[in-house]
Image 1 (cartoon, one colour):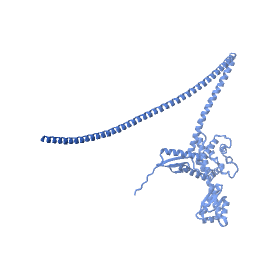
Image 2 (cartoon, helix red, strand yellow):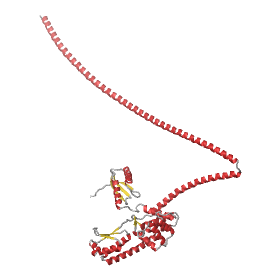
Image 3 (cartoon, helix red, strand yellow):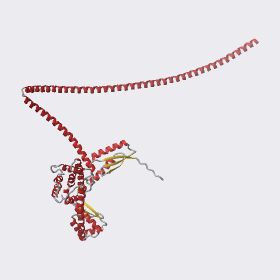
Image 4 (cartoon, helix red, strand yellow):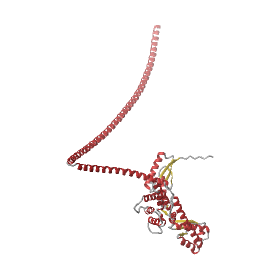
Length: 509
């Protein structure tokens, strides 16, 4: 029984142990299985990471290889282009060399033809020389000497002609240069101011009431004044002023001085008007004599007729194209004297001819004819030398030149009359030209202000320093000069002065 119980207990314990062992094995198997699954999952993840890493590395390698391939292709392309350019240059050089060779061939061909022509000409000359030798062989000694002398004479004439031509050209160039230097020097050493021409004079009045007194009762004062002076007295709406109009500058000046004295005196009636006009006429006559004497003394001229000096003084009140004729005559005398001194001629004769060259303009309104002929006749009648008379008569190239002094006076007259500023243009044209100069300058970008100064001889342009630089300044100056040359007409030259301006302003408080 105990054995049986022991066996039963043994079997029961074995079953329990088996069951427990089985349970333990199942749990172990499950744990191992889970571990294996985890390991498999980790392996898959690691494999995926390795895969992604390899793919990235492969892509980077591919990009690198692609970049290297592209760089290599670019380098090869650049090299190919460089090679192509070299080939093109070589082709161009080859073409140039071929052209050069072709030109050389043409030159050689021309030279060959020229040599052939010379050879034929030489053979012809040899034949002629042979013929001459044969002729000489048949000549006597005297005949041979005669032929030789003729040949030498012909050669000498030819050489002399060439030498004279060469000397003429050289002396012509030297004479032209010398003449240019003389004229420029004379112009630089003699400059006088120009004067404005006018056919009217304006006399200011102290009040409007004075106009009625000038007119007088029933206009007797103004009629007396106009009849005695020969001028037109214009009394209009111009405030506190009357206007004197007359083509004769001397009569107009007499009337102006007489009117000024009448206004100051205040006693305006026919007798007083006549008295003051006579005084003004005497003053003008004395002034003309004084001006003529001063001009003669200034030029160092001696022994001039008094009537001629008085007529010369009348030129102070005469204008030609805005140029005072007396000042112009003095300037011509100075220039003529300078030219004569440089040429080693008599300065006094040149100055005398220059001073009197326009003497006819003092009386040409009283006598019919050109002022040169009128002046020459007057000078001849008053005892001037023939060379002075000829200078007066021919200074406008109207007669054939007979002496060098005529040429000098004519040149001096042209210099004085044509120099910039000597003869003015009309006021309207002058103002329009100045406005156009400033308008052209201000039309360029970067220009802030522009002023026409020195009577339009210079344009001063101010640039904005922030918008321009030195190179721009030179370009703007060049462009303004070109536009002025294209769009305007003007005497002499116009200076374009461009500057950049920077200003800084502060206030101390």
